[in-house]
Image (cartoon, rainbow, N blue to C red):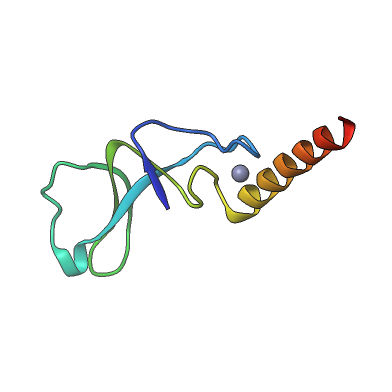
Length: 89
Ligand SMILES: [Zn+2]
């Protein structure tokens, strides 16, 4: 996984990077008193589950790509193009 301080898009499929978030289980950790934004609160038994975000960090699962499938497809297209170019010379 790679982290970014802006929201990149996947060069292969154009999908936007997800927010890099943390989970906070009130049941085990108590009330959240930190500086992160609470972007989601889900009611669960024994205390809510919070989703926390720092307001700027996004993540891509596979380096600059959203998933391994995209990275492999992009790499193969690049090699195909290079080989095509060499063949035409
Ligand atoms: Zn992708």
